Image 1 (tube, rainbow, N blue to C red):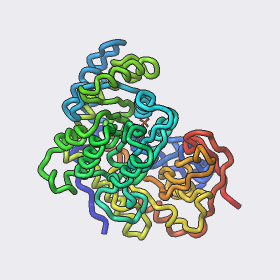
Image 2 (tube, rainbow, N blue to C red; image 1 turned 180 degrees about the vertical axis):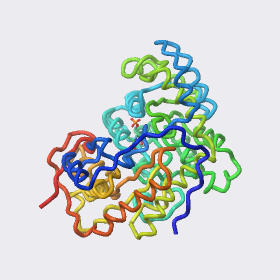
Image 3 (tube, rainbow, N blue to C red; image 1 turned 120 degrees about the vertical axis):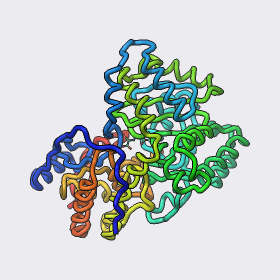
Image 4 (tube, rainbow, N blue to C red; image 1 turned 90 degrees about the vertical axis):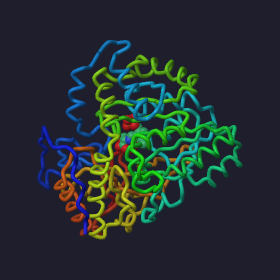
Length: 461
Ligand code: F0G
């Protein structure tokens, strides 16, 4: 039986109406959107689980902070507040603000990579790999095998397989691997955390081979929660101390603050003092691509909201309510026998579309169609994370056929209630019950890059 979520340590102060369209209207809307949930109008969505990115609700303290925006072009006081929060919560001394995560990824990879450099990561993320490749890098996956198997139970499916990293060093030589890039709460694996024990080992290995570690700390707080509840060494350690410990293993980091920063827009790069040279390079690049080095594409008020959001997120009570809400939706679907990524991750529930729709070939995009059907069933918007998201291999031009063919139901932070989770679960169960009659899809428009955002499809046959 589904376990009830832990109550939220806050109450609702303001509400935003949402529309439930009729089934006919929903069927028309998804057809007009080319069976791509990214192309739906948000007005036509009842419960929006497309992403947890920039979709969270801010606290009263963050909203109050918006009124204190210092919109000076240079040296805004909100930038210095942001630097203080990054130092206090994460421990980094040096901050380069950016408009969001991919702005930071662009600067980072352009700054550190040379043509043909190998970039090991614990699974890929779409924009991260894209920016690494645009800067001449070659992505290599070093996550443990369990991460690619939806049903495999492992408390830290985000961990690195040291043998895979070692094999890359043997094959290419450490000098061709300047950086290893690790993400906490691995997005494409289902929001799966890494452990500090694993991070420690990776650090030791990298130090021995003069390889640096960059962290994509986009969902670091949710990973810190899992460390506290699953890694016995840290059960009495505060979330802030765990955050400091994670960051202490890195030489650079960036954050899409739209997730665990608890803001609607924003990002930054964070570095330790000893990486001043790289920081200086990034600070010189940010003025070309994002904005002055004391705002980097954010308004002063956005930086203030972020400075406060970072302090909001580092609380065990908040994280427990957050993750247990996600776990509630997961257990409702598991109770119905729906194939899922296990264990439940931090930011969403991931449906295993291959097992859900085993009659659809991966080149007819089962996860894409499943997301479309879930919308038609109840106005619940989710996202494909499979063959469409993985794109084509730049060398062969073939679809990449990732092992994981998933639909992601991403839960915005501090936004929906338990009733919304129940409604979403019921809509998905409705699709599960008629799964055999669902056909696959084919492209009618395929963009050349990050194709999942704007692709259009029609049903096969
Ligand atoms: N890194 C990770 C792990 C992400 O999940 C994202 C964004 C980015 C970087 C890029 O950040 O969107 O601020 O430019 N993920 C969103 C998602 C889009 O829906 O998972 P951004």
